[in-house]
Image (tube, rainbow, N blue to C red; front, side, top):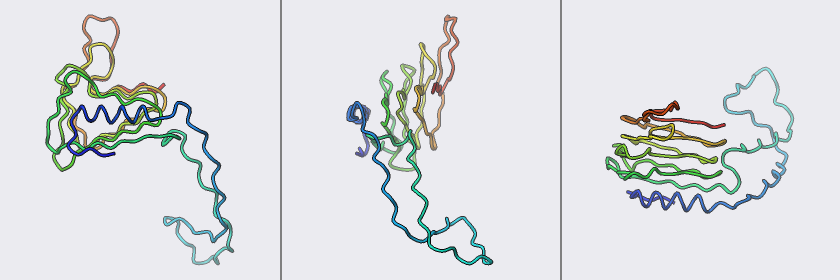
Length: 193
């Protein structure tokens, strides 16, 4: 679903609903249907050779197998639209996107980017366990982590993905403090292993 001018509580509720809507063990993919025989049509980018006569009709190649990562069986998606130019405070709670097959897209309703301000109380997003997050036309500012990598966004787990389009990030950081551990990713940290 789409939520125009969504509040952050609405965003969190929509993402939680998508994450919990997935079946625990998605069913196996059904076999691909057999394609009916027909003429072979070259792809639009393939040049036609004028010196060769057209080939006799032959069955088309079998359809390509779907990508195992996106979208997986049982996938759930939500698209969230924020007000153009609006400023949203995360109030110390990062937005979590979790679960194989969960796909969340957050963008704005107009030209001016929406601002997500973490106020140096938390990072902006945690993406894990095979989820995908797409962000469009946003400003992510003042993300912070004192305990782990990724001041603004951390992406972890096999199959997890992050896509950014027109996203500006500034003043995001991790605190190295007195810890002997090294922390990485002032803005983004990804560990997909």
